[in-house]
Length: 122
Image (cartoon, rainbow, N blue to C red):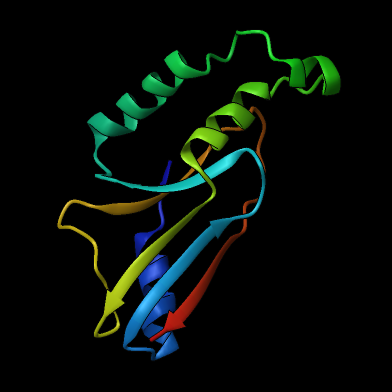
């Protein structure tokens, strides 16, 4: 889990668009973007909750097909989702005080991740 809030805010600020929405999308089917309070307890709680929803050691038909052992990652990413829309005003993201944008990589091996940010003005 990686806090990408500052990177997203920088893209918005550098766009010089003052009012609108930032569309944030992670490329790939085994990662997600969401918002949460990026603090140590939740950085433990979220993976534990996802372990209960889609355990690593469960049988996945995806693994039977591709033999890559990351069926759990696909299921987790599908539940959390690949994208967010974040409104902004005055060139600043309209996030809550304790709300950060995070990238969560669920895969069982290292991946290079690309996060696409499109700034839409009103």
